[in-house]
Image (cartoon, rainbow over all chains, first blue to last red; front, side, top):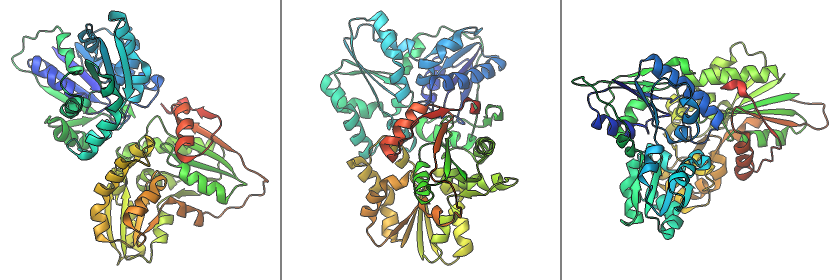
Length: 252
Length: 252
């Protein structure tokens, strides 16, 4: 059993880590589209074009299951990619939405495009039409996380500025609608207090049904640009030791 | 006389504004490679591949002069692009370097790739070998500027953290090695004090020698993704009213 996971960059490693923990006997291919990152502020059409090529790549690598570990791509591209995809293709939004079906006041944070697409909002409305929803983009979190400033006063201040209104609104649930955000989950939780439950893309493990007869799985990492930087930041921020990262030049 | 100016995004508008002010009778084509931005953390090979296509596009549009208004691309791609380019191709680094030929202690800030490429450093060494040089990446400035947080306490704090060492080093000159940075020039100047002279890509106007017999010039704006966002941010941050921005889909 081979699981393909893709994202625009390192963010999807938070999904990879939790999926691998639950299914350690599978093989993994992780693809980061670093030549085109970030996806968060590009258009739908562009994201579809980029991710189509990634899907093709992962299918050629014989993945039996594919996970789109990017919220932006899950929002705007997965519904299109699923058409004609011969293997199960999971997105990171659907499993999160299932988790909030009983929540009453749901806040959502993410990149500009994820929020603008209303992907969470539309899906929540379908299974939880009475919930009140508050969605807002928080675009500075990703650069701050990638700069490694997760324990700084600056991040604290940015959290305060972005989430002040949201805190006053007093949600019972906050969706971390970006795969980078679990890295600063504690900082967000401590600002909002314990009354708000934080849910992120780790919810995906409850959705995936797979079994593998292998004893142990291995993982290959591919990027469309700068393997060195990917390896460095994967270790620094996500504590993932990637070993060799292969560069695919066909994505330029 | 038609001048082509390109950048990965809106940053080059700071160059466009000053060039247009000096040469108002020329026609302009501004191209922003928004499908691939930001350039600052991608590899040299990737940037060369992206900018080759842009050069081809501007030549097809019959530009007589081309300005690479992106520091990252000026650092890593322009030397390659110049080979075989049938019109003058200006970068934003050379004119800045000429301005610091008598400085003694020169600090440089920019994106990770600009700093890593040592493009400023190498060029300065050639004409001012005795100068002491201190170069550092300041990658959070661009997202903060693009978020419009130019007058916030957060930016003040980030300036302090990034530039504290640099201030203590007491440079006579600071090169703003990124076209976004002129937007926060005053904030940087007020932190460093008046003893440090700030020089940015506006220096380019002293290098360009052109004359035009037209009465008045017009400008066309092209992007490789999301014209709406470009138009909005051009007005909000650079105070440039672009009018219609055309989308070129051939860059995906």
